[in-house]
Length: 362
Ligand SMILES: *[C@@H]1O[C@H](CO)[C@@H](O)[C@H](O)[C@H]1NC(C)=O
Image 1 (cartoon, helix red, strand yellow):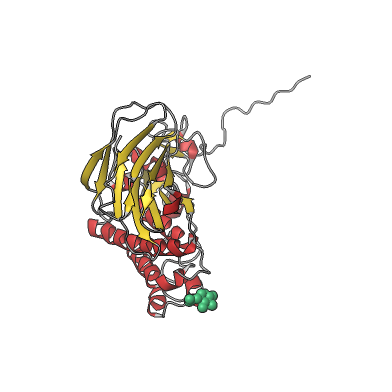
Image 2 (tube, protein in one colour):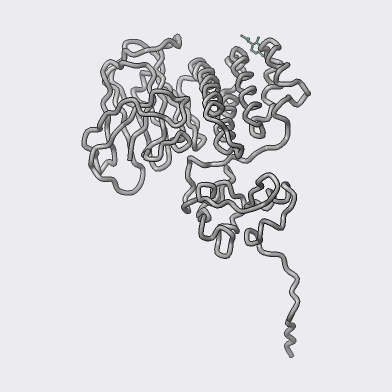
């Protein structure tokens, strides 16, 4: 005999994750811990624009019956490296990768209680460097973030010490970009620009570090990537989403390095990019600017799908601290090779500039 029990009538239930109303939350912490609701000062509600889909932590809200089932798409592949679970398409967009936010520590002082201001006026010394690394960049408000970047710059000589791994500068840089991109307070143009000027100040410490740390080096953080090689290697490649951007050259007058930092075009207001924005710095071994390098070419390689063979445009950017980025001049590729899926751009030989910033247009 089979006994089937039905539970009829009153069913005690809470809505499945991502399907409930946001206005049931009256406290900010509860609102945010839902993983899909937005706190706007005094009330809890939903995001209304698809550009915010990347901010969501609760994938249920993007699936069928979820609150964003028409606005956002759940990602096909979720990685433990980043927090994103939804987007405007099922593939993660590298421009919007969110690294997990660590909430231990403070943005205004180090773990042992020294304030950012105190650390800044102290001489840059090694034993304070490790205090600086405990200041939390991820939870900083914009003013605090700018102060932290000033502090990093102040400690340039300590960061250049051979005992310090370049990762700490990389971490500062990608956490700064993420902080700036995901800041939900309305930042003024000067606030953004000043932060970026300081960001590039720390990036210049990083470039000096690389020139003395290792000949060949490469690291990728989705929306910010670093590479360096020597002239003797005759090429450098930097990988982006579905593409690789390479620089090749033939001859050089003496030894030195090509350094490349590639970064998210979307954050800098570029919506027609095929590649990341790439900032190239060519230096002699002593770190000075260098241009006597011959037949440098930029090669774009599409790493998947099919490509039409029509020529592409490469745009140079005049000022890497400006939001949005503004094009200064452009060059056209030779006919693209649709079998190899490459397009090639020829630079002046020798180079006219030891530093240049560019992206390739769709
Ligand atoms: C580098 O750091 C080490 C360890 O803290 C220290 O002993 C050394 O003096 C530093 N070197 C320079 C050039 O500052």
